[in-house]
Length: 345
Image (cartoon, rainbow, N blue to C red; front, side):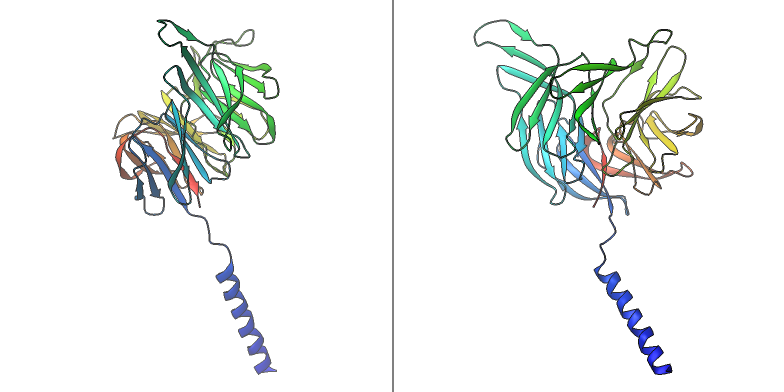
């Protein structure tokens, strides 16, 4: 009986070892950082650049990963560069402007199924040999990725810099600009759902500035951004899972370019000249740190919520411990950049 028990125990150990050998590898976190002349990939374990892809020479105003993390789209205002995140290769370029038709992309989003781009654009048309420009009202262009064609176009309000898909509603988008509108993609019907410049009766007008979308595939799906009234600072919480919009009043006022929500939804991290940690539910300031490297734009956070990346700020990104908000180091980059996204692979 003793020998049989030892044999069974040995078999259990072998099966456990085999199960470990054939189980899926744990995903690693990488930062995708588009700078002015290359896409750079940062390993979040070592906080070092592990690959530089010199695929373009352009100013990248904003960027967005697809929902599955397989594609990374870079907004160069008149063009969109498309990268395969597994091979790190530039696989396509969508050039929207021509000599007589200037299309400038202000904000954009990738459809949840990865088949379309939704582009908030200004469009200026010119006729050859005619010294006159025709400036169209702002447009939402629906760009079909497989066919590389604009398949729909809707007139939208001015200054829409934030375009957001809803994870459980493919028929609508949220457009964030001077106010927040919900647009129906079948016919372009607009519904105002939140007022910044035009608040509800009794409310204060507010200023809101969105350029950087710091969301990552697989995150909680809640976009957070600071906005300002004459008397206070608030956090806009746009839940892309439900379409719900919530405001949280901050206890202090900081000038902030962009924010990111922690994976456990307990904290908001935000940056401009300072990097600040807030309680996501109460808006209370937990800790603020003046940035040694100066003004920063985007922020990103690891999937376990332990490390925060602030920047690019010119040609570098600063790394912080989220628990203590102490600086862990700086990652030098090839060139200037203003966008970053964490993609786990």
